[in-house]
Image (tube, rainbow, N blue to C red; front, side, top):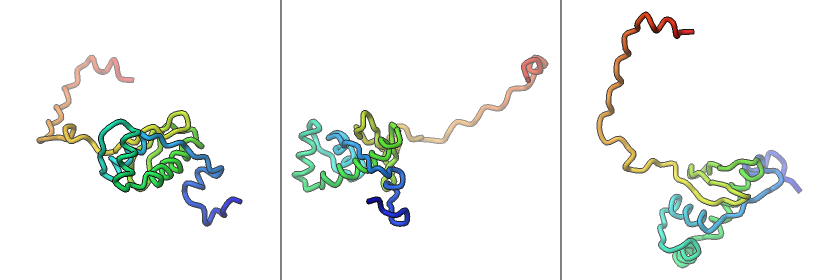
Length: 132
């Protein structure tokens, strides 16, 4: 039985059939790193076990990725922006495969004053021929 539109969540409105995406171990690991700030070493399977050892609720992360990723799967998208954290969930073949942060890397941020915009060049009689 479908809930009424007044009680439906945003995910249910965009995905009335309840389609869910699979959440890969890699996506769970990246979500924990980028949303929760928990960094673990090793390959993805070992990282999930390490997260569980640190008492991170891996099932809740998987469920969250599955529901939000299901919006993209149901609508044929290749990525979805997760509303609470602003993270981008990348979808491939019905699965959330990774989670990308929206923050710029520190080395890409400007370090000093920006260079001024050069002045416009003076127009010549040749410019008139190319204007439409």
